[in-house]
Image (cartoon, rainbow, N blue to C red; front, side, top):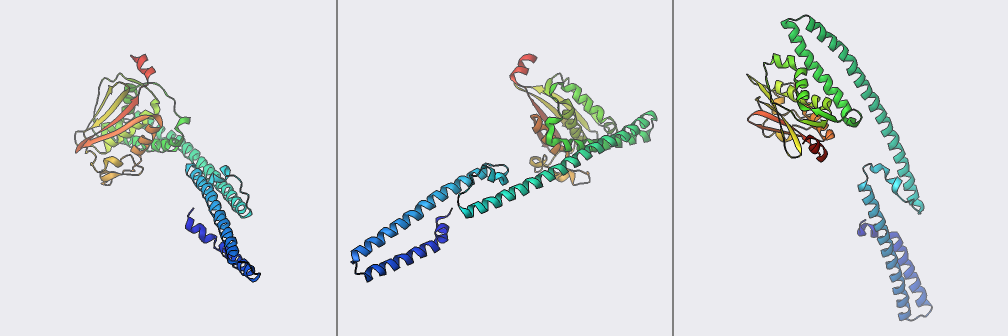
Length: 337
């Protein structure tokens, strides 16, 4: 609270006191009181007024600063009335009631929005599960009637499946703790499953796949890691060059297992690298006819943060390396050692 503003607000009270002082001085002089007596009474009145204004300013400033500090520490600042002490002054109680009414209105609005989001999320998840049925049916029909045309359809179906999976995982990414199951996972199995998910797209793009002997086991959710690898593989296919190559390898350090996915594609411009995990960021390559949504790597980063997996990207002129870093705690290291 500003002292200058406080004094400005107290001008009416100060003016009344000054008028009272002048009236008292005139009254005392009219009754024959000596100058020293009048001056003494005037000074005492002035000291009492100044002391009162100073004490009130100090007490109010301290209270309001505490209130501001409490408000800044709150994540939902509209809940400030819940931690405030009920004021004693009549005008302050009016403002307190107004804040309580505003808080109630805000909570009702938030509750309504949360219900709408929940219903929309449930609808999206239900729709995705339902649309997967015809996708699976078309896939079976194509696999039972092998032809170059059928293989083209199967590759496009993998595209469709990637987009539906992306939508589903985006809908669930806000509350991953309700959908993931952390257990011992063989990274080699997850890599092979992700490659199998994209086999027709990889074949269509003439991608050469090389996989090192990955014998590492980590504690994570294999389904979510498989989705992350699918997004990375999809990007490698989208931004490929002639004679594309995709390589998977893993190394183990003291407390981490790092799974690297390396391609020889067009790479990522240096200026774009710091922003590739931002929501909706497509970068220079994505704006050149690649139909990029800017959601794939954003979702990968979001899910990795939820699962405690480190995610980094490295690119120099050509080729890109995406690294997934799995934390190994002391217990896991001792068991696997």
